[in-house]
Amino acid sequence: MIDAPLRTGQPLPGPDTLLRRRGEIVAGVVRQGFIGDLYPMCGVIDLDTLDELMRSLTEAYPPSMPALHTIAAKAITLRPVLARFAQAGFGCEVASPGELELALAAGFPAERIVFDSPAKTTTEIERALALGVSFNIDNFEELARVDQAIARVEGHRSVIGMRLNPQTGAGTIGAMSTATTTSKFGIGLADHRDEIVDAFADRPWLTQLHVHSGSQGMSLAHAAEGVRLVAELAAEITARVGVRQIQRIDIGGGLPVNFESDDITPSFADHRAALEAAVPQLFDGTYALVTEFGRALTAKAGTIVARVEYTKVTGGRPIAITHAGVQVATRTIFAPEAWPLRVEIYDRQGRRRDGGMRVQDVAGPACFTGDMLAVGRELPFIRGGDLVAVPDTGGYYFSTHFSYNALPRPAVYTVGTDAEGDRRWSLARRAQTIEQIVTEAGEPSLVPLPLLPSA
Image (cartoon, rainbow, N blue to C red; front, side):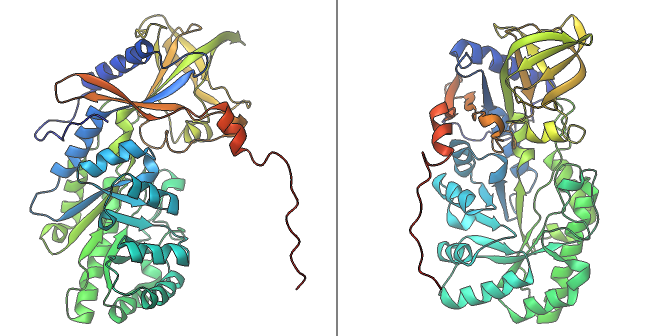
C-alpha cells in the first residue's frame, strides 16, 4: 500500500496524463516481470488517478455540507484498494454478506457502511442492526421483517431508510436502469406513495430515503429528477408527522463513465451542478447526504494488460488471440454495444505502437466465437508477443470474474507515488492458481450424506 494522503486543490488528470501513466504502467509490467507464460495477463490500478477521483468527489461538495461518500464495493472487491478508500475517510456501500465482511476487513467503521440488497435475510438484518450498519429497506415484506428484528435487537445504532423507485423510466442501457416502472429495486413511488408516508409516520426510526435511478447510460438530468421526487416526499413526510423525521437522503451513484477517450467527463462537479439545478433544497443544510459511486470512482484508474499469444488471418481479416476476454470483460463481450472498450497496442518491451494501422480483430482466450474484445477495429498492426492494454477497467473488471473454461482470476497490482515522489508497485491480489481452481471445483469424489429419518 502506498501511503500518500489525498492532495487537495489538484485538477483532475487530463488525457495526456492518463495516456502517459498508462504507458508507464505497461512498461512497468514488463520491467517487473508480471507477465509471462504462467501468468499472461494482469490488472493494474493507478493509485494517483484513484486518489484524484476521490478528491474530485469530496471537493464537489462544500465542507459545510454533511455528506457520507461511499465506494460501491461491488465495483472493486479488492481489499487493499477498499482500505485506501477507508483511510481517505470514505464509507462503503455493500450489497451482500460477503461485501459487508470485506468492508469491515478493509477497515470501514460500521457506521460508515451502507447495506443495500433486495434480498436481505433475517440473519443479515439482525447482524446489520447489531453492528450499527446503515441499511435501506427494499420492500414492504422486508419492512415487516425489520419491525420484528428491531424488537429483538435492543439499542441498535443503525440509520434505517427505505429505497424508493422514482419510476422515471430507463436510460440507454436497460439492464443498468433501476427507475423503470417495473424495476426489481425499491418501492414504486407512484404505486405506493400513501403507504410509504404511512410507514414513516408509524415508525420514527425510519430516518432516511434512498433513490438510485441507474448506472451507466443514465443522463445527469434523469438521475437528478429521481432525487427531486424523493426530496419532495421527504417534505411530505415532515408535513405529515409534524417534525423533520428524514435526516438523510441517500442519492445513490450512477455517474456515467466516458469509455470513448481519456477525458474524465462528466465530472462529479457536473453531477453536483445537475442536482443543484433540479433540487436546490438538497443543498440548504436540511439533510445530510449519502453517495454510492462505484465505476465513476474507479474505472479511469484501471488497466488490463495481456499478452498476444498468436496472430493469424482468416477471411482476409487479421486476428490477434490474447489472454484478455470474457473472464475479465464479461459485460463487454456479451453486450459490446453497451460496454465498448478501447484497445491499445504495445510491443513486447512495453513501447506503444502508433503506426501501421490495419483493420483487425482482438480475440480473447475463451472457447466460444463471441469472445471478442474488438471486432473490425483499426489498430496498429499487431504481432505475436505484443501486449494489449485495455483502459478504463478499474471499475467492475477486477470484481466480476467469469470462470468460464476455468480461466483463472488475474493478479492485480497497484502503482502510485509515495511520500518521496517515487512511483512504487504493490500487489493487490495474487493470481488464482490452477491448483486453486481445481480445489474450488468441488469435492474429490461423491460421498453419500447420512440418511435423514423419514417424516
